[in-house]
Length: 257
Image 1 (cartoon, rainbow, N blue to C red):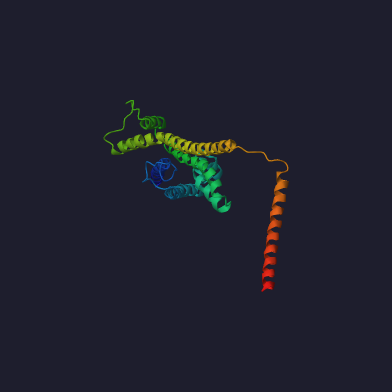
Image 2 (spheres, helix red, strand yellow; image 1 turned 90 degrees about the vertical axis):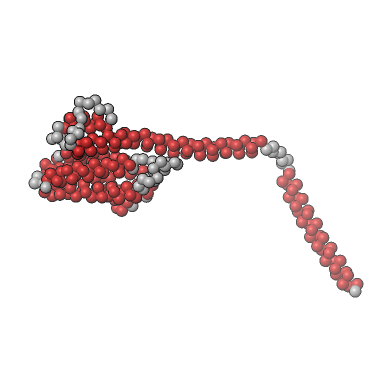
């Protein structure tokens, strides 16, 4: 039973690594203007996958916590805190959303740092393989990931499992090394587009200022406002006088009849 749990947990960590790698690609989960992978899962799908894997790792951690005979020794182990850090991403999201009631903008600014804690799940693999010729396994894995292949260590071609593991390490290792370049490319594109929008707005503002400066403005005489006020009053008086004259003429016509 212990061996099944050991290899099952190792398999879950490796499978969890795949959506973590896919999540960094340009697609529905990112704001690239030209997504190259439109069939990749959305942000919601990645969230539910994270919930599933976190539940698996959390259940394993809870069982080990309960069955531990010496709690002080259990919490003094490095692997315990590696597991805790690997679970903090989803726990932190739940606390910020439902307990602290943070805004979505504030949660998004913190989430990108919490996501880095999931990498401790990969560190867990190193601990689980500590008794399996660790240095040689690590060296072989790094050579496969880097696609170097010096030839000093090769998988056993008669063992299908060894061939599959080596193939998966080479394929997903190359994709993992490409992740930083994808992230940098997307961020650069978004930053450049924001720069273009700001430049376009600034250029329009400067052109408007230049057009306004080109308009000639004639200064008014200090008494211009006073003259305009007198003219307005004179026109009003003439209009009232015209109405009185019209009324007087109408009365004269009526009396003459």
